[in-house]
Amino acid sequence: MNIMSISRRRFARLLGAGAAAVVVRPPLSFAKPTQPDATSSTTGGTIVRLSANENPYGPSPKALKAMTDYFGLACRYPDEHNNILIDKLAKLNNVNHDQILLGDGSSEILQLCADTFAGKDRGKLIAADPTFEAIINNATRTIQQPASRRGMSCTTSSQKLRATR
Image 1 (cartoon, rainbow, N blue to C red):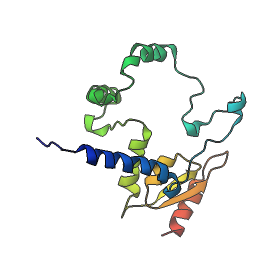
Image 2: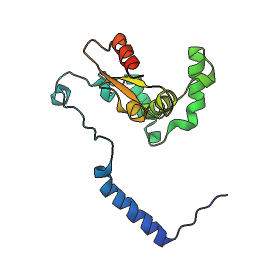
Image 3: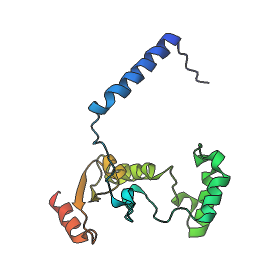
Image 4: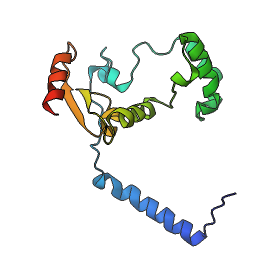
């Protein structure tokens, strides 16, 4: 059994260092601070920012009941039930259990994808601009292409990729 022993003095030092890090961190951070764009949805309009994972319809009555019934478990990660869900999803989609990967939110999965396909000594990631930050923040090399109202051009993406080789 691995037991860590810590004195009160050492604990106080670590607590002080942690508090100092919280105060100092924002100016030293390399990441750009994110700020939600103001849209008419925040002022009573009908625009929904899908990039912010907003659902214009809200939960269905059945989903709302399930959430209410299990609200007491909302403070827990669902990992202990993953295998049950994976088995059901595999059967529903006629795939093997090993072909399904679950995560607690999309950031975890996007980080794994970035590490696998666009990490160190891997390929480049072509992403729309704007895009969800989790994937581009974890990729080693990214090519961002502005998205228009009509989408993104695969031809332009391919040309940009060739130009950066």
